[in-house]
Length: 292
Image (cartoon, rainbow, N blue to C red):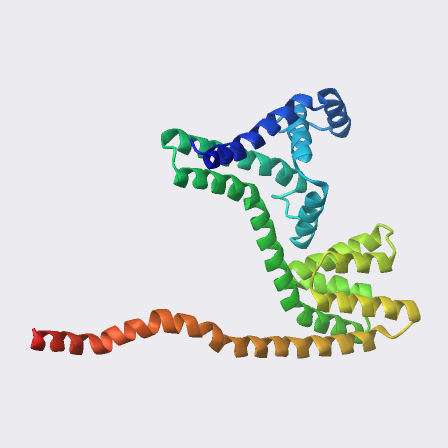
């Protein structure tokens, strides 16, 4: 075989060898002790024992860099930390999916050792490893877009409630109770943080940190400054609601201006050729028949 083929085989075999080596050198007793202390008093659901779950989590954490784990945690925070995708589950699932992709690649190579099968095996390994990241990232983007869309209406509800005589936290509770989107969930979580004794400023800043929407961050900064310097919250809400409505209209106008450019390429490559075939096809057939 050529050196390139040996290099590609090593790219598949070496990660599997490192996985087995990590399994061999893992501190089993320490992991079992830590897991036993954490789950003491709880019962298992019959799927995985605490020892097995701790073993898989320990191996997966060894295979996952710390900075990459922090990035996953940040994406989960932006996605609202869905119950079906906790951080520990993602850390365990990624190496296992990559291992499954590598096994599929080895099976392809065993069937027929060719360049296409080698490339397919490498692609399957990489794709299955990063597939959970794609799901989390897509969920985070959609959630932040929903927050951006809900923010102007929520600010209007807060302004109406405050001008009607409610306090700011009561207005937040009312807006969160009438809303069902991710912004209402963030307001509810912020109120819960305040109720358990967390300072208001920290609770508001934590809500801004859980989002990538700049309008929400600006609203939180304005509320924090108003609470710090004693400015009337109604004036702040009125200004923020007005700015949010203006920015929403500007975003709608921007999307409308981008629409002709986005339609141009499908129009050229898909609609115009079909239209030319329908209009000029019969004439072209008649010309060919006349000259033949």
